[in-house]
Amino acid sequence: MSIHNDPANGVSPAAVAPVLAAENLHKNYGPARALGGVSLAVAAGESVAIMGASGSGKTTLLHALAGIIRPDAGAVTFRSIAGPVRVDELSEKERSRLRRESFGFVFQQGLLLPELTALENVALPLMMVGYPRREAEGRAMHWLHLMGLAGFEARRIGELSGGQAQRVAIARAQVTGATVIFADEPTGALDSATGDDVMSALLDSTVGQGNTLVVVTHDETVAARCSRTIRMRDGMLQQAASQAAPQAVPHAAQPYAAPQSSAQWPGAQQPPAQWPAAQQPPAAPVQAAPQNGAQFLGAGWSQQ
Image (cartoon, rainbow, N blue to C red; front, side, top):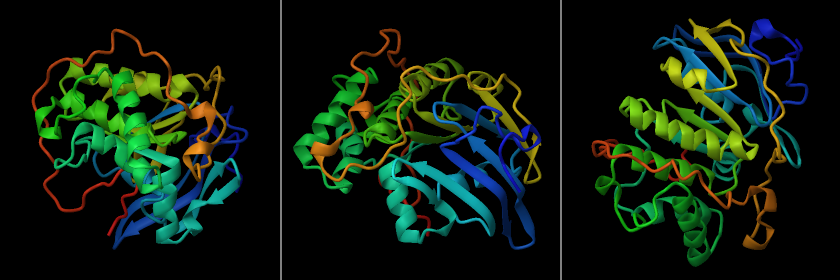
């Protein structure tokens, strides 16, 4: 079955050569169906919101697209600069490396390491792929400044507001130069004003730079800010895009290939030189640190 040009399956007509594509995905947990034949294509530079009730399969779909889980059947393809990669056929170790080097993640609670400072949290993914600490922290500091967090570098996560902590998570997700960012309820733990501010920062730093954003959300206001919305019910796509087909993004970045050394950092993936002055984080309640032991190490988390 071809996944292209099929609006009934949530595939954008503009996505002729998608950066990320899923075809006929199935996933069961015992007798419960999580995904029942989902096909989806995501174009480079597009923002896609996935909506649905709890248990509809939206987070399972995001995890399958991101290589966190392997579907029981179907294909997930990521278009890297080196060529198409069948994510579903990779080993656990290979999928972990793909997440660490090519994807970025922002979650509802951030999943930042409470023992580390904001600077150390953002620098960690770079050090995990071989960057010297000094250079990693230099790049991390630049991203924190772009997020309006100059002066907060030495604070631990418990010393930041919820909105500030999410900005740290956004910086960490992109410091490696990832061109596809996955966000699971990124504003779910925030008040409406702070959530709107965080969503602005997320959009400006991803699709605003030609990269791709896939967001799972319950919030219609968050979905309305994305270029396309798909809805899920009982593990299947309920309806196609609710907005116009995505338009080409100016200065869109090419698909990302992880740098092998600091000298190979792709110029197109340099953080923007300026950040909108209005994106200053408002005060919000302090965000609780993750309570379980499965800490998300940069983008290199591996599900047990």
